[in-house]
Amino acid sequence: MTLKERLEEDYKTAFKQGRHLAVEALRMLKAEVKNAEIAKRKDFDDHDVLEVILRVAKRHQDSITAFNKGGRQDLADHEKEQLAVLQAYLPAKLSEEELRDIINELIAESGAKGPADFGRVMGSVMKQVKGQADGTLISKIVKEELNKKQTT
Image 1 (cartoon, one colour):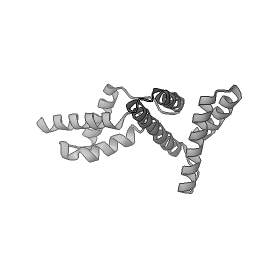
Image 2 (cartoon, rainbow, N blue to C red):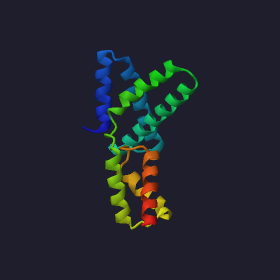
Image 3 (spheres, helix red, strand yellow):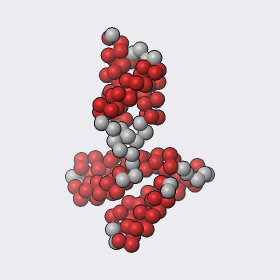
Image 4 (cartoon, rainbow, N blue to C red):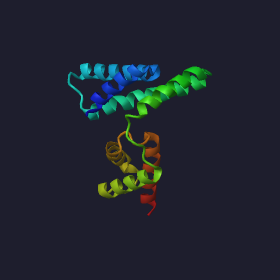
């Protein structure tokens, strides 16, 4: 079953069970996928759908931060609940140790020697761990590991 089919089935199930929050979140996600397909003029595969889900999840995270700053806890809670629905479709998050191992492996493969190689390493890491780790954490670890390389 493709990710798009799973979204559709889960939407129908949530609708039949009267889970209004899940219906709202999945309806919005399905619309985002459809709009992206129209914009790109192609049917999306699982990789493309995952990109849309990641983008929508990031938007929810940003909204939560903004609502918390604005003192609107009710809206922040609503966004958190919708984000929880979407997280069922995202890949499992990597631990910091797993991420560090992957980064060190890719640094070794690329032959990176220091901070000047940051962009090259960062690009390959982001491709490999798509959706499994936060970009700021990846960036922090890549910088740390490349700085270690430079000093040795």
